[in-house]
Image (cartoon, rainbow, N blue to C red):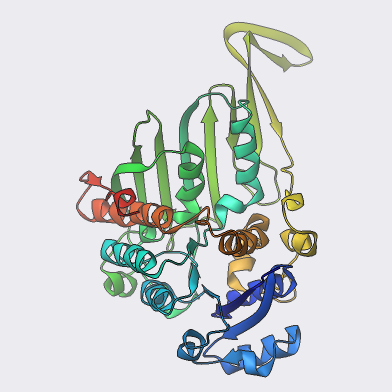
Amino acid sequence: MKKVNVCLVGLSFGLEFVPIYMEHPDVGEVYVCEKNEALLKLAMERYSVPEDHCTTDIQTILDNPAIDAVHLVTPPATHAPLSIRVLEAGKHCGCTIPMGMSIDELKAIIAARKAAGKNYMFMETTIFQREFLYMKELYDSGKLGRLQYMSCAHYQDMEGWPEYWEGFPPLMHPTHAVAPCLQLAGHLPLRVYARGSGRINDRYAARYGCPYAFESAFITLQDSDVTIEMERFLYGVARSYSECFRIYGENMSFEWQQLAHEGPVLYTRTGALGMTSFQDGEKTTYHRGGEILEERIEVPDYADRLPEEIRHFTRTGVYNNKNTHLSFKQGGGHGGSHPHLVHEFVRSILEERPAVLDDIMGAYWTGTGICAHESAMQGGVVVDIPDFASMR
């Protein structure tokens, strides 16, 4: 059986993926590329990556005919230029979020992928996290019923992160929030209306020209009567981290937990009239409104969808309480999604098919945020999202 030789570029957050590739049964050789030599040494020592598979120069990776695919985990402004270089070198490309920093960059990546005839996978974690997989299961089974409304948010205080994040416009990087809702809806985004709110400090605001602490948006979908509400902040808001969504269906609804140690809440509309309450031990039934049952739930893990060799990575990884990284201190490991991302990337290459999250979906999801930020900066004008599907 053919195996895929992969290079991981960027070992700060990217170090998390090294052992997953090393243990994936369909991966042959694993290479790493990182400018920080201390991180390269860590990869060599901790995961036995051969010294001749480690480099600080990405061009040596692109020139190496033995490498089939490159997974980019680098700063946001590098994503589009590096993705294009990888594709033009004749290699499959997986790239962390966001796909690019402008609509023109998104279109350039699509053009490069078409010219290269290689795979591009947008490595968005949230549609492989256990909460989304659970919602998809409920929706596909018909238990949710008709979708009525969805809302999503990414709350994160990024004080202390690398300098290039300072003042980053909130909705320029939206996919941790909006991807689950767009994927569940199954309809492409059509247009968006957004507003900014509050203020960040002047130094941060000057870097990207965005003064807002918060940006919120409403998204209209093609051929659908469902609206998606999206919001995000990065600085100056007293709220702990959450990448969350709320799904409101005709029969069942799901709300993300407010606090990390709680479970999410599932609501069920039984169809019966009346609501029962207890006060001082006395039962009272009100015969107005439908009966709604509510319960906190434990979401299943879905590791059984993965090869046995990498199933344990849905619960464990490189980073933990003793070996911390800001993404994991704040984010809790992205819902067990990382081995699912790796598996989809590898299998899409071997099966010679587009990845579930290809360049077209990456462009729509990233582009929705770029257009939302544009709308907010113009005081709330409605902005049409480009027709990326016509570029397929």
